[in-house]
Length: 222
Image: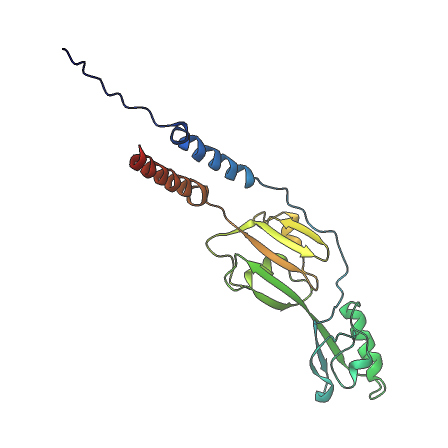
């Protein structure tokens, strides 16, 4: 009797293992597509008016009791025992200054007064010191970001989000002569610096690790 020797032939890996490379490629392409650039859009001009939470810096010549920094209250007035009847919310700083001057004429015929407004603006995202800042009218978004210590190693100056009221705008602060660099803050603005995405670190490496796990399982159960 003759025994036939059976030849062992290794089977190729099943389809899931053969598609790992394709999976990595798909993830990388998807990440690249999701990071596509959107056109920068500067917000339309809007009045620089004060809101609740903003601060007024009032300086009256030789009248220390009328001078200081006072917050705009929830009722729209000024947090000062005498100035509280002066409406500040919803008005530009120059108009509030004139209202304060008119009020002070009850105490002095020609009051010498200067009023400076400070807008409350939140700056966050990929910046070194995210915080709520009190900024002078005329401060640009780029200057506001710089006041936080600038962006961190993963921040993107070409993808800065400005939230103003119910609207959201995307600014490119890398264009030195672009409109985005000229945008100035308004009271209540929220500025968010987006994160730089690393396709290799966030998509390719996890996929390769996943592929290695699948290969290990295959070696155990084959």
